[in-house]
Each structure stands twice: as C-alpha cells, then as structure tokens.
Image 1 (spheres, one colour):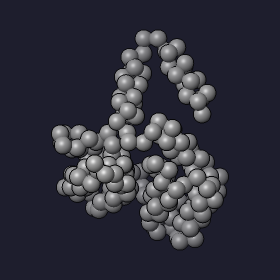
Image 2 (image 1 turned 45 degrees about the vertical axis):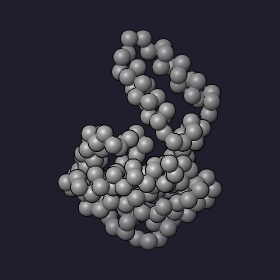
Image 3 (image 1 turned 90 degrees about the vertical axis):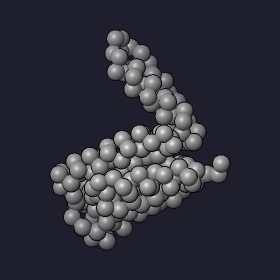
Image 4 (image 1 turned 180 degrees about the vertical axis):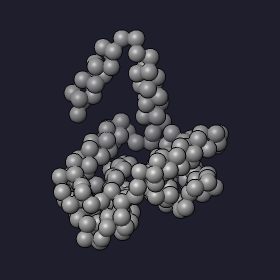
Length: 190
C-alpha cells in the first residue's frame, strides 16, 4: 500500500503545470487531516471499497441484476442499492462477509428493481444540495461527514460528536428531495 501511495505521489509530481492536481491534492489533504480516522485507517477503508466492489462484480448474477454500492468508514461497511429479491441481497451481504475485512456490515440494500439513470442523477443532485447546505453551516465540520444518497434516502457516515451528528441530520432532513435520513455515524466523545 505504501509503495502504491508513493507511486501515485510521484506520478502527480511529474504532471507539470497542472493546477487542478495541486488543488485536488490540497483539498484531499485537508479532508484527510480533519478526518478522525488515522491515515492508515483511511487508506484501509479505500482498499476495502475496492476489494468489496471486486467481490461483488465477480458474481455474474449480482453484476447483471442488482445495483449495489459499498461505502466504508472506519472499517464498517454500508451496503446500499437494490436487489430484485432477498436471495440476491443475501448473496451480496455474504460476499462482503466472506472477505472478513469489515468490522460491521450495515445492510441497507432494498428489495426492488435497480434504479434508473434519472433516479441516480437525482440522487447525485440531492447529495450536492445536502453537502452545500452543510458547507454553509459554520457550526458543522462537513469534512467529517460523508453523504451518500440512494433512491432519495440520505445516508450519513462519519466519526463525529453527537452535536455534529444531530446538526448534519437536521440539515439533511430539511433539504428538498430527501425522503428519509439514515444515520450510520460512529459517535465520539468530546
């Protein structure tokens, strides 16, 4: 993993005159520095996301009949999306469980047909609206909150204090288009 990180860093340095890379690096560095997770845990979470995606896509029935995403935060996994039946939903959960890398799995896969492109676009718009409203609120450190929207349901993840969690939930609940807010926070003490 360390070698991969060094390799990526060297590649970025070779991109001369690319201001956007510098900006993205600065923003990413700020978010990583403000995150309650250690750098090692953040990198492990990213690796877990890749491992889970690979495990799910290896199974033809899951790949062709479902829409499932995995989001990892502090080695906990949130599974969201749709499966047409409980057998495929359970198959996805088992694929993640069999990796033996997750501390906890939050199964939020809904039984139903995979969402359309229009619904997914609307979900992206909802996520943008929620994040924008969080960014405007001076009392909330939105760099510690991850927002994921799936079919109008907003999932909030992060290692945050209770007050920050409550504020994030209130902002998300009062954003147009949000049907439901699901908290997947880990609460830390002051």
